[in-house]
Length: 188
Image (tube, rainbow, N blue to C red; front, side, top):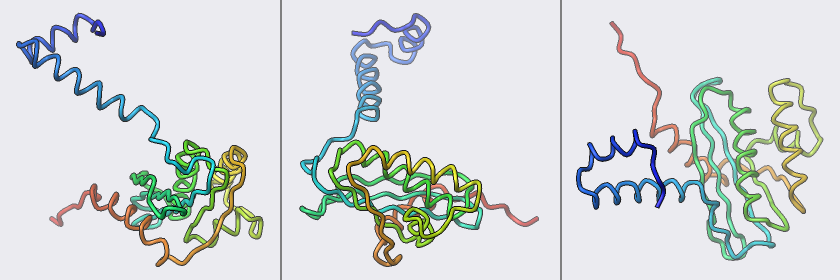
């Protein structure tokens, strides 16, 4: 077992006088931390094709923003991983870029031979394909980060899809925003 610092050990003894309760508490905390720190389970599709659906959105532009990510094994039609999180006050375009960046980082853990990315942001897809230039300085950093991440994959494709076809990633964005709504102020 791990030897805890004396100050923590004293505090635990105060909170949990019984050794069994104290040990269970510590074991539960460590188990939870290890599960969060451990890499995600790698699906059977390692080496195959994965589909990545990403969406970013903000309520206001800029406003409270979140990202949603779905990684799917197209062979089995099953979701391998979902991810949603709030990212603070951002613009819609920054949220879209950040969703793709996080999606690429997560997808990298599965080592696909081919990654097909689906976004409902036509602007970002056209920028990534070189059809549009990235003019905004704030977006250039994200664009460069994606270019760097793409080099870590064997094959990556970017496709624009209608928003209706990206409803699962969009739902994750809304769920993240709804779980922690912005504070509202009462009128005096």
